[in-house]
Image (tube, rainbow, N blue to C red; front, side, top):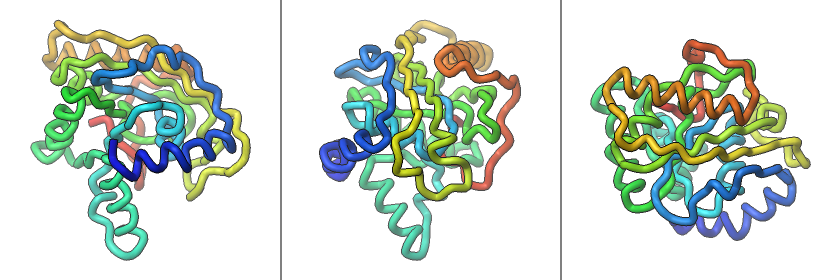
Length: 228
């Protein structure tokens, strides 16, 4: 676990947990060891904070590569913060550059680490659950680890899109961890990845009860993470 992340877990983490008081369901589904991909819906930038607060072990988030190329005081601070927290940069343009995210994440997973992916590829613009991209399924099959579907409810009220900081008040937020999905032995061709991804999104929907939209979410100027 990166040093800064460890410090945050024992200092900032308990404080945020006390302030926000999130409800956590299915915590028993989180393994104590071994690699795992968390595939979550995405309502707010606060999703990352809450996940890091309630999951005991280190979470490596896929974050858009632009955050790692910041300039000026704020940009440089964010860049060094993400690096110190062990985040993995993702090029959203696709192609060979985007595959570097897999190159970075697979050793983490095979080494027993945990990686968080938001299959929708961006925050939901309206609270609905959009069609997932295949990165989570591809990553899990390449690394040989299970996928845990995650459903987050209420963070869009805690930190709406466009609001820079989450409200530092008790929040009606629930995080649900589903049963681990074993994708081993499944065909990882285009059709197979699509099928696995649709199954992952169906499990997420069961956890959130969101309305499902069978198309990709429209891109945002500043999405918090990507699902490739």
